[in-house]
Image 1 (cartoon, one colour):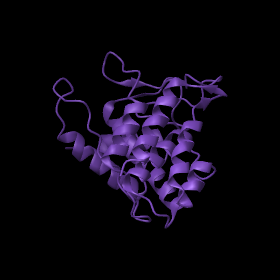
Image 2 (image 1 turned 60 degrees about the vertical axis):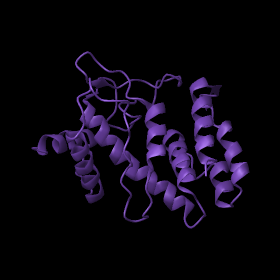
Image 3 (image 1 turned 135 degrees about the vertical axis):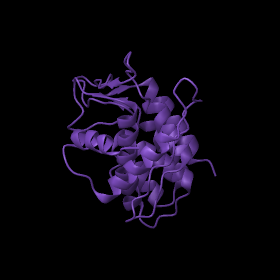
Length: 210
């Protein structure tokens, strides 16, 4: 398979060249996509773990990837199978614009259209960064894989792992109290959102699963 068009497309989206970690993540995404069933024959998507950044050695497990993809969804599918960027439905100004599996950034704005390969590749690239941020924040704190996955999902959605009471309690080993904190992160622009209530409940459940 000629990978150059894929790399060129993602490089154009990012507006910069790749790091080696991103190259590795994108290579893996292409390999996985090449062995996938056609969309009409494929079962419910089974997300693959994101690659672990070498600096931390941490990784996102399949349960965490599955939870994130369930709640982010690959929304706004067009008739031709591509996906268009959409405004945040819960914010007053529509920001941040989002596409694919919850991807945001300076390159995601009104009018942007990606295909499935671009959505999947960007998810893998994004996960490397979020996994690294959570792992760096936690340091040597005792953490199970399910706890880690739940915290990555939380951070991917909120970006708040460093400033949250949830994160602080986890680092102190106060796991029961930390688990209770998920339910407090259900607001968007000051309004409680049913979708966030359900997502936080699933994250809390995964966090508390041995």
